[in-house]
Length: 161
Image (cartoon, rainbow, N blue to C red):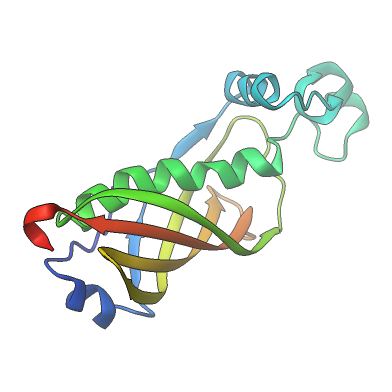
């Protein structure tokens, strides 16, 4: 993880609204990952899994990751980031999404990473309700793959409450 902002208290989190709090490491989106996502979801559209057809018929010149595969990476980004950034919390839940846009296809073989901006924070019973604007960037591509308004809940450790 690069540029991780660690917090010591809930008040520090509140003070960081509007700040970029994390830039994740790069993650390779290879055909194996795409195929496993297709297997898990049952989405076998040729644009994702048929390399030969995608090479000859798609405007991308090869297979691309599912948009929802790109979106699902937020869980990976959060797992690494929130554990390091909020040591006074011990568990969390994905609360949902307010807005998601897939703005650029992720070609097989690309690397992506996430930029997390803390957009809102509110106190909840036993923890924090956090909103992040997450931008998933593709290495070497100007336009991002995905921009999502994501909501997470993190709960305080018993000794920190």
